[in-house]
Image (cartoon, rainbow, N blue to C red):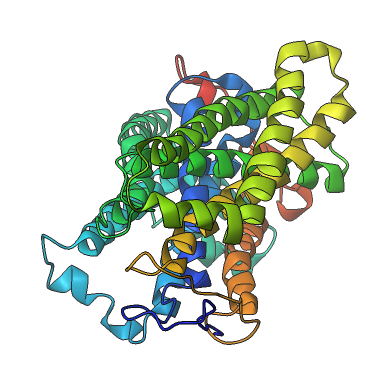
Length: 413
């Protein structure tokens, strides 16, 4: 890490930026978890059937990113082997201990929910896989529960709906809590805001929706499959609505600082107009907010008048811009809050290292790990629907025609 004091005098109480790229990556990954889960729940709980083609994929993506959500924190810690101490010897007044319990609860709920959604398909693949070596794998994935009677399926679905319902507040709590950790630091005027948990949660949903939308369009394009018009439109519409609320709250918070003009505004004004000018006004607001607002707004307003190809291109481009917007927001919050001195005089510089356990390459590797999990998952189980959509050459016989149970049609894929 390179850091040095640039204003020509020594800051008496701050000389280093301690929270580096891993602390920026940590809320970014948890945000995708929350957003992807919300997309899945919009179909499973709120009956948005147009999101049916991505409901399973979004759930798997949430699980894959949740598995590695704490890895940036562990990588940042000097002694990661002590991380579980907050679980074994919890301090009820510690914000990080609370995060540990919320994260563990949410991960457990998500894992059980995925197992219930996929259990019938796992059993079918166990019975019909062409590769004998995979039978023990499918048996383990089914936990030995091979009953796929209608009664067993009905019980699975009832429990799954219950878990999906309580998973929504758990997902919101997971990422809102990340914002709470920053917002509760009263000594830092850039972070201390009651809006921080809400802003973090809304930006999380934006990034999760954007990631699901990009993957859905690009993977179908690579495989030569047609995307669902209604599904892409629903994803763009959802991202657009949450983007509007998110950006409005972010700007309101900034305007609030300017209007109150407390003693800290002098240094914060220099911060946003100087060190954070590019990442805030160019990337976060202009490229990541204004352009997606206009482009996705055109898709939402004109609907069927937008050709499918143009809609998909807008979905991918705006999805990438939204991910950049959320990444810039995380950077501005985490790094911006450490760039000015606690004495409100002078700034610190920060340059991203390429190597090292907190360098850029380490961050890229950590961010790529969830996609490796998703790829492995896709080799074992169907991502975009039930077992009917799984490659037929991997099975001994065609899967049976699924007859949805009465009242449960939305769970058949």
